Image (cartoon, rainbow, N blue to C red; front, side, top):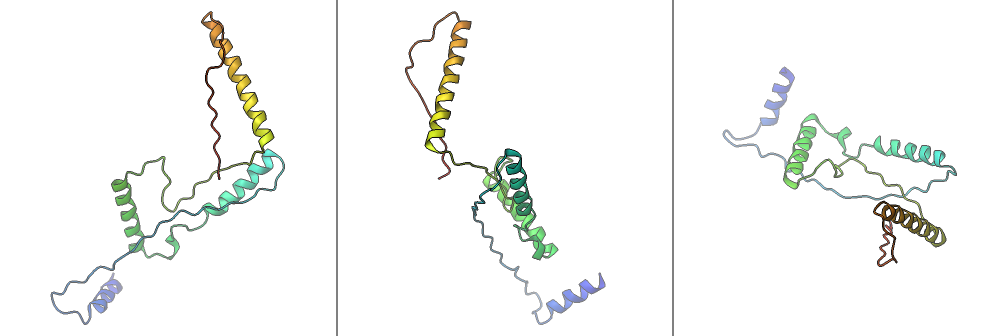
Length: 153
């Protein structure tokens, strides 16, 4: 405590009486970074283990820069984050600044995609027939079809 007072007095040295100290202006920069790691494993279990190892490494990084901050700077960061959450309406479904999010994707060739679409159509027809039977009706011809494929780019 005594040391802190001495430091405060020393930092005030040279200031005019009644002159207020201006707080340091801080600038916050936010951006989204995307990275891709090809997974080399063959089985589903090995892929999960490989992906989790990468995920652990990324989560262990100091993405918020907290390791180089003073306690006062950390407090200011937390206050700014709380203000941003209240001002911009972040909720639990949205990514938090400095916290990584993960997405797992697999490329599917055209032949495999066609095979998957055909299987989905057959499954939908069977489900429609089952529902029609419960309503004591028959399934008529297809009058519309909607296919949604989500591409990662």
